[in-house]
Length: 125
Ligand SMILES: [Zn+2]
Image (cartoon, rainbow, N blue to C red; front, side, top):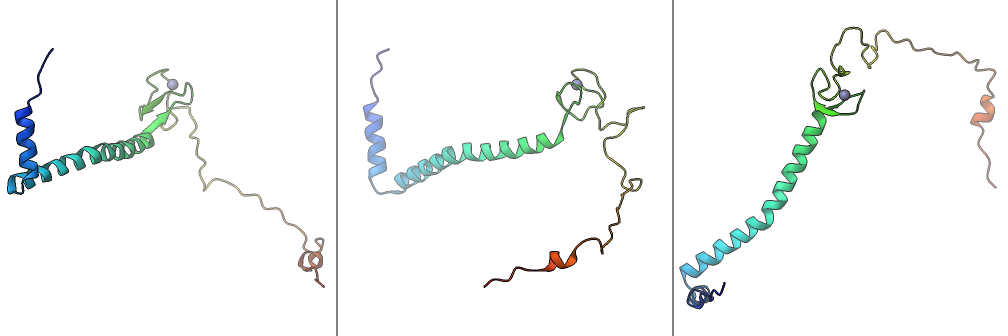
């Protein structure tokens, strides 16, 4: 392919850009905006993609049996195991009910512990 450069158009564009006038100013303004758009568009798209990915990742459920990540299905699409979030019969939920939990507190005799030794501070000097 032997295409000759359009020197006439290049000279015309250069003249329009160099000469002071509304057309040159408009072209420069347009070029500036286009450049800004071309620079900012990938950044904005990247930020939007990152936020979208974070939102997606929150909704992803990982199968306990095979580790496959899926979107909130009752059954794993890969292996068919019931997901822990769904109320499958005969399956215990992973979270403990706080009302039924028992906290064991062990009483310690205060006199047996040497309080004086704990409160005593080393004297400097
Ligand atoms: Zn699975």
